[in-house]
Image (cartoon, rainbow, N blue to C red; front, side):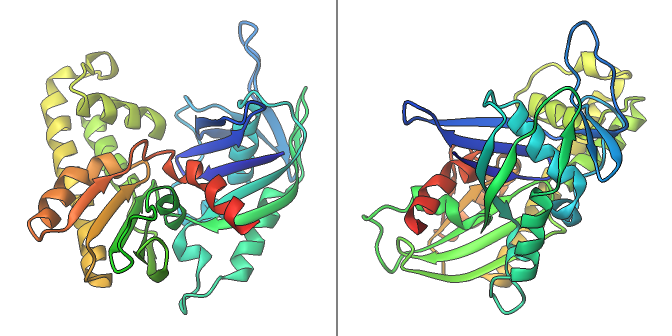
Length: 325
């Protein structure tokens, strides 16, 4: 069996083809703490041992391990998040082939060539020996690594695309911004770039600081929920201790979105020119879409936010992998 995995720093996304030949997807918020948890009210805890250390999946804990850095891709927490997503998938633990991803800045070296050392390091990290208390783990036969962002365009750029049309895909995740410029329907990949200083972590940190002023402490996952509720104009009173400071939190969110979009724009303008379309994807696409659209459509560049942007990459991996088989 083959399972496809976009193991991002804030969420782990899975996809696989079921017995009815349908593509199934699953998204899990990351969140591990050191040490084990107790079972509560017949709810099973997922307690692991890896390299002699004890860890537990606890996405609601304030003490979850920080994953918003590029080192996460080669960490024990990455190994555990991939295993945990599989545990929650509904699939039976078994030996599988796993297709995973790396940020473009990690997948390619400074000469634009595959960084074989980091790719092998990623594979070795996935294959670490993990033990699950009172349970069985998934193990991996073949592990294949693909770069982030570029595969997304495989399902979008059809045969009707002009061979001289240039499309720029920008994948904004929790830790990195990954970009790639493609000619036609993948007639040529002209350039790739990545920046591991640009990610939604920047916005989450600023909102977290605003929440502290409102006597409210939330972990990364819950701040993300709060942001999504604010953008949907939903009530957040129940999540805030000092509701009088909600206007301050909303103001900080608007400022943080602009700051994040500006960083994306600077990266694009410093690295690319002469493109016709921008495709935005990744878990942070919705945060910067309106601002990037306003900026570039004044220059007659079409800006498209890819549907289901958080899972767009993992949904495209089966397509690109089948082409390479």
